[in-house]
Image (cartoon, rainbow, N blue to C red; front, side, top):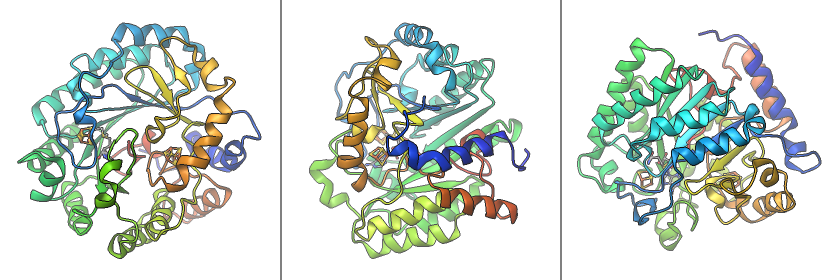
Length: 384
Ligand SMILES: C[S@@+](CC[C@H](N)C(=O)[O-])C[C@H]1O[C@@H](n2cnc3c(N)ncnc32)[C@H](O)[C@@H]1O
Ligand code: SF4
Ligand code: SF4
């Protein structure tokens, strides 16, 4: 895997340099290069910070509907380069490979695929990952990264996820993925940890574990909201704002982390100290979310703001339609200032960030490539 400066580096640098201008609404929103697809709103976990598992029979688009939408709007989706599958628990959809295939058939330039999973059902998870990879590779995907959630060592994970023995099974899933990665370097794996009061003292141990498993790990502070995670009724018990330990942990992460993520961690340290989010977020511009019912959102954290529904409307009418700019303005005003999400965490969003990364790169300290199109062994991408 080359670590030199390539086309992708320039694309990301350009994205970062122009981000403030695009974000200000002075130029037309670009067509997105990243699609986050929430394929299912069901789950067999019992997490204390995400209540998707409480949904009863939520609507789910069919493979046929997805195929139709992505053929119909094929022209608009030429710019998509990354597809990220999340849920709910994606492995619960037994037609997941067909669903991914239907998206990829209408998105010929997607080269990077990512799948988020709780990893607590190793056999099923691994089987599903293999089946997805079998359809994605022939469709032109060059890199497949699996993001596995691990929120603590042993009992801490189990308390958070509400599943006895769940943490051990996650570790089994990660180990088996690492084995697969040995034979197939196009497969990446990383761990994602949501930090909340129960596990904020467990971060160093989790880093050590990730190191021993030879996988990268990313941390993000918990999001509390009535949208996607639906945990606002218990927000005070989950919140880390004002917690000096968590604040210090994120400061240390910012100091030690190379690449784009350090900017995100620095911002999170500030937010945990009570400051509003300072980094702009390009969700709703370079990235979009497609929900399991066909609704299009800027991000999962703003489900109250819908661009419209792809099952009944064309993508171009939603993304650049009459009320799209007003929606983006509301997003900046009402949602972003208090949102600690990592949705766009690992990509640069200012001239300063691009320059710092370029200098790091030239000094041989790090690289500025979009992590999701490189090898998950070496680096990580935004968490969903
Ligand atoms: C909703 S889950 C879907 C994928 C899969 N079920 C899983 O748990 O990894 C996607 C990501 O959101 C994270 N997450 C869950 N609750 C969260 C919260 N309240 N705030 C921030 N991230 C959260 C999960 O840890 C996971 O990394
Ligand atoms: S975080 Fe993932 S595993 Fe937990 S309830 Fe939400 S979707 Fe399910
Ligand atoms: S900061 Fe949060 S609410 Fe704002 S666009 Fe990004 S993910 Fe969405």
